[in-house]
Length: 438
Ligand SMILES: Nc1ncnc2c1ncn2[C@@H]1O[C@H](COP(=O)(O)OP(=O)(O)O)[C@@H](O)[C@H]1O
Ligand SMILES: C[C@@](O)(CCOP(=O)(O)O)CC(=O)O
Ligand SMILES: [Mg+2]
Image: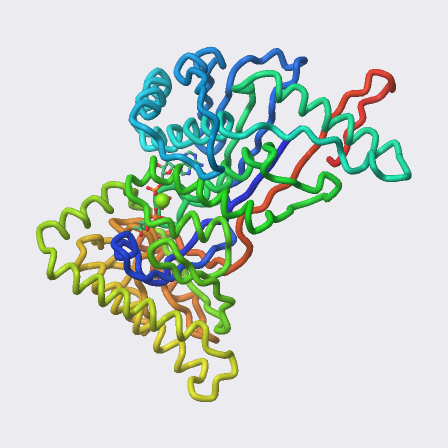
């Protein structure tokens, strides 16, 4: 049995950093995903360890399940509510000890926080919920077919093996279309995809085993995926606002303030060029830098955050206004959005999160009368450029790429996290190998 989940990355149209301090921000999902495949071991695998495979990095880690049990001795307390707990100091120490022994190459040390978030979500979700043990609906159907029998037996076999031990041996593999650490929310999509795959195996989530292809979660289940992913983001970001995991979980375009969000179907079709400066940076350090600046200049920074809030609120109104609004034509809307993006960029500069390469992108796109702003934490990473309707993009892309940057466009505002199940079963009674749902 294999569970595969995919969770999208995001762009922030306005409000990054300020959103951490309570301002409104507007973000949209993009059609670039992190994929996770979770496969619990079967007796024939003869594997008593938890394996993490980071395909893009060419890295593989593994922990014997006994070692994990040693670090996380059984908790006698039953969970009072399904709400996820935060990582305690004690658990953080256990995770650090599990990560320490891995000898992650120095050049790739940034992924240590991702590995820690992985261990936290894996051990917590395992320890917190019981695995589902329900006989397939198919048995209740009047017509029992060979296919329904195979799926039901497969399900039963899988569930029995899951229930036998607390930290189940498994292989968890990740691959992503998102450049890591560049402002497109790879950390959040990593946590959302993982939380979704893990929760899909618990009694909290019911999925249609008969359905092929990607399927979405019900709203209540999605809320839980989002809450767990937020706990994972805390391990990577330190102090996340929650906007990245929310947009990755729910998709769409969202207006987000202090944990509450408004989902928007954009009535204005926005086309954005994304330019990756390829300058690596770390969201945790940048967020901490803005907080320190706020401590040094609380009054001035309060005005900056309040200005960002107004920008995001105005942007929300424009995005929500009807498509055929006679008052605001498409061109007027685009001009207003571009201006708001430029104003936001100015405020991000005053927060100290721009970068010389970001400034180069801004200068280059301005030559073509295009408005741009950094997206995500800044300090390098990606820049957004609004492409007005009918704009021919080739020349500006060529100029940006001649500076060594990488340009691409992405569809925005699509679906959030989704998953798919694959069920394999060897039936010794039958001579051949039968694979169901593959
Ligand atoms: N596919 C992945 N595998 C392992 N770690 C990941 C993966 N994607 C993201 N991460 C973790 O998230 C970090 C990047 O997050 P962050 O600095 O917030 O940038 P962003 O979210 O914009 O990509 C990485 O350094 C790593 O620790
Ligand atoms: C800077 C911030 O607003 C967005 C960070 O996005 P990213 O990790 O750079 O993709 C932080 C947050 O909202 O948690
Ligand atoms: Mg991030």
